[in-house]
Length: 72
Image (cartoon, rainbow, N blue to C red; front, side, top):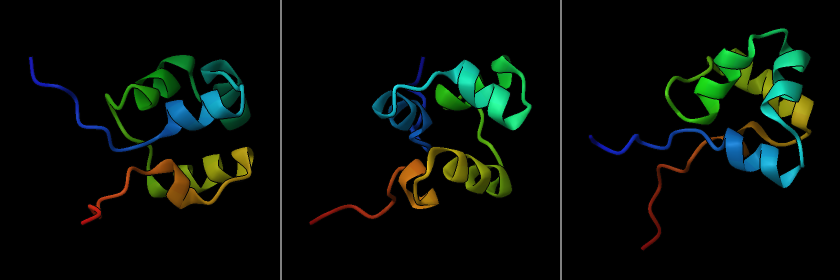
């Protein structure tokens, strides 16, 4: 089975802030299943939702996405 590509950093940022998937689901009015799928990169939230998540976590939206630029 191929390793799932990491696109978002939701799981990491939530852990850094000692917040849970359940907390985020409640904040957004989404199901826990949906948020869990985002946190495991099984699916991705839309851009508008990412911006809303960033606001709830008080971070720049760019912090929620894995950088596509590789350092040389």
